[in-house]
Amino acid sequence: MGMNITPPPYKIKVIEPIKIIPVQERVKAIRVAHFNTFLLQSEDVFIDLLTDSGTSAMSDNQWAGIMLGDEAYAGSKNFRHLEEAIREIYGFPYIVPTHQGRGAEHIMSQALIKKGDHVPNNLYFTTRRAHQELAGGEWCDVSVPEATDPESVYPFKGNIDLSSLEQCIKRCNDTGSRIPYISMEASLNMAGGQPFSLRNLHGVRSLASAYNIPLYIDATRLVENAYFIKQREEHYAEWTVARIVKKICSLCDGITVSAKKDALVNIGGFIALRDRQVFERMREMVVIWEGLHTYGGLAGRDLEALARGIREMVDDDYIASRIGQVHYLGELLKEAGVPIVVPIGGHAVFLDAKRFCAHIPQNMFPAQALTAAIYVASGVRTMERGIVSGQHGNERYDGLELVRLAIPRRVYFREHMDYVADSIITLYKKRASIKGLRMMYAPKELRFFQARFEEIN
Ligand code: F0G
Image (cartoon, rainbow, N blue to C red):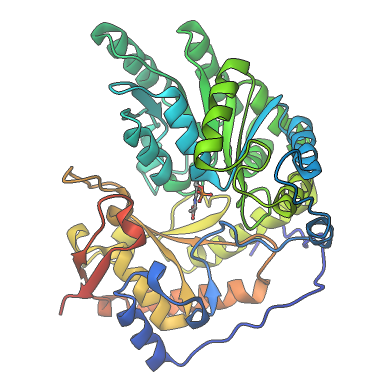
């Protein structure tokens, strides 16, 4: 395999049984779920790679923290612990807790965006873009072209294209449209979990400062981005991941975080920032939508688990083993000739459905069809990241058509990865048998969660 394997710096204390149901039942289950893996019952899933969100295994230290929940309505000591952890690891003074990432995105968008504003983003994340648009903003893409090329080996596909960004700013200046903030996502999820470089971030910071525009990062997977900087960018090989995380945060005005990823908890999110006035505006909003400003929709025990998770997530051995496992799976598939997005990302391996199912045109949802075929073949649950997730309204979409195999943190063994790879390699050899789909129903917003399909014969 060649990948330098770092053994996990932990061992097992509790297990949760999983079981594979027979293939005839899987065929039935995917039909009942209308070929949408979000609609499967989790008991019918063997290995769940739907998402790395909220699916981490917590440590004994975090579980011990759960018992120390201070469930007072106001002023819980667990919130103070969370503030201390965020100040120490990320370095921001002001914290707004939320129930999860989209709660933070909602408040950030409502607090900063006015109707007609333009918000430059490196590509998009589904919920982040939805909240920007619901607040009246217009999304503009300033990602580098490599981000949407699954075969490009460019090491920093999460970068912002600095000339696109400057053009976007100038265009807005000319037309009198405002840019409330620049939005930059770490470990760019929709491009395959791809990092930005510190060099690029410095460039974005310079433009933001020159035009006096705040810079807010989606730091949901910042630790994984920081690890890639350590691995790939000159000058940072000797830095700890914690130091890189701190450095990134020093270059932006604030962050929104879904704590269900990097931070190793099953629920939680927050905004952390430096601007006191903006903070106060957000704190007024959190009590309307989330809960009091010292719990934001979370229980005291959740705040404590999160405070502890934030300290654990920057352990260099842990993060090396976590991303090492993702790479192990990716390398198995790549070596067998299965088309995947390169470089292999931080939280997931992405199959390129345009090449995997070259016989299915994009308007017949090849990635969606592939998620269903993988489930039937193996009991493994994956997620569509293509036209179903990416197309907005009636706008044309010919972008990435991917299937994501997201790896939960500290959950599965190497044997699980071997099984997943084996099943997908076998399916790849029989890929001509995979059929396209027709969409029967789709909700208006975030349609991938609930859309229903049927097979085209
Ligand atoms: N930002 C990014 C980059 C995300 O990946 C997610 C969630 C969110 C924000 C929203 O956070 O789920 O806590 O409300 N991503 C999940 C995923 C759903 O599977 O990638 P949330």
